[in-house]
Amino acid sequence: MPVFHRYSTSLCLLFSVLLNSIASTQAEEKQAGFRELKRFPAKEAHQAVAVDEDSFYAIASRGIARYQKSDGTLLKTWTGPKDSHIRHLNSGVIIDGELYCAHSNWPAAPLKNTVEIFDAKTLKHLETLKFP
Image 1 (cartoon, rainbow, N blue to C red):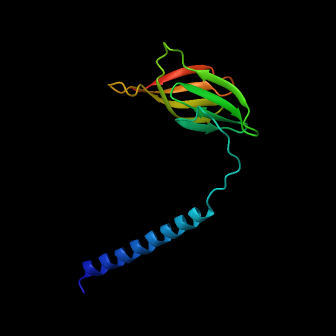
Image 2 (tube, rainbow, N blue to C red):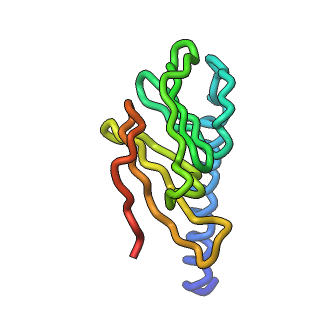
Image 3 (cartoon, rainbow, N blue to C red):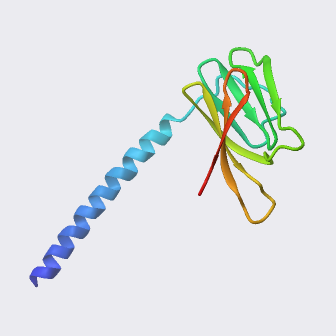
């Protein structure tokens, strides 16, 4: 058997073992799954939901609602002013007490994307980060 063939066969076997191991690990993780603890109606949740320790944030294209995580009580809302550049919020994450939302001017063209930053407690719009 040529040396190259022997090495390529060994590499293929090693690669197969590694892939099998990764697939097994992923299958075990998938079996762990998630368990739904509570479900709350949130009419604003058309685009995304973000969460922190105490609240969840339902995100619509031009609005955000903050709800109490324990019982679903509506705590605060924000709606983009009609003359605002905010047209299409489409995801969110809480980092250090601030809600970062991905934003685009969709369906307008050319597409312009920004990150919109809000105070997580008050929902006051703090800043717009533009992409170069």
